[in-house]
Length: 382
Image 1: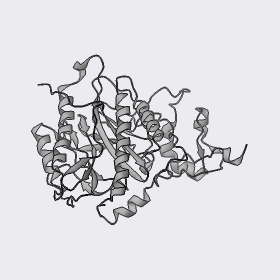
Image 2: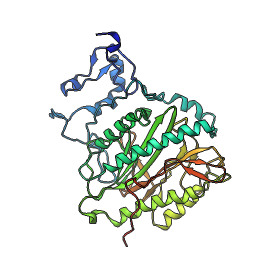
Image 3: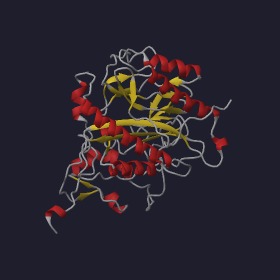
Image 4: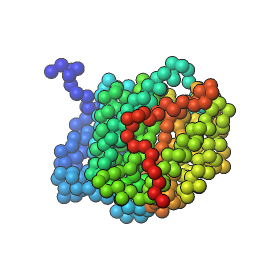
């Protein structure tokens, strides 16, 4: 066998990811039929907190038995994490990767944050971002078509991952600050950043799929909330529909305000007004953001009224608007996985997101739906 044919081995630590010749393997994973190689004992210990999410429940030899890894945590609603997670999915060598793909640190993004400048893109850069967004829409639509009762969120992650790399793209969330998966799946009271696992979608659930990908040096970012519908649509509550449709409308209303000269600050006024009129609240912890060369950068785009964010829209600026709208309180709580954000009261949350570009006379929705896109609005139930 030639040297070029030897498969490269990378450290399984999300905070490392370096190519290694080490023979040190996690003994628990080996017992479960998973090969997880680590550079050395230090690497193994430093990464163990996140790595142990792959371990089967004690006594389970198949990995099919789901368990809650945080039994002492006080959850606000009914959604629970269902571990073990599947191992980090492979990205082919030939696919261009962002700087966090190995160790989780977006160094270039962190350096750019210090400038606090809002990028204005050239025609050539816009062309690439537009293509990335078209590919992102394709991936989201394929994943959305798989949403139905009985499907697990990890199965959706597998679809997103495979469809992303099939398009020679890198799934932007994968290992970003050590996020372990390629898409965020947020069910019912989960506001955002839900980690795909063995959770099974049930009839009457709502689920947000947040897809981001990296193509030829640029990111696309978009998401939608979908109804999980089977044979009995009566399980879809009027509260669920109102929350989802209010979120959808809030994004649409905010986009209508986008044009040169509009401040990013004022978008929150329009969003919160519509949310309040529909007896919903607006999450304050998370916001829209600049996107393109960086996964996240200036401007910050809060969705609540009275915010003090800086910046005025100019042609060539590209950013997201992604209001998170709650059925009950706007206040959020974070699970011990340090990612999953839920409503404090356990009531539902819905979100929609587009990547947008300011033009000379208005705005272009780079991540726009097409006629074949799954999902779409439903009539409210009185």
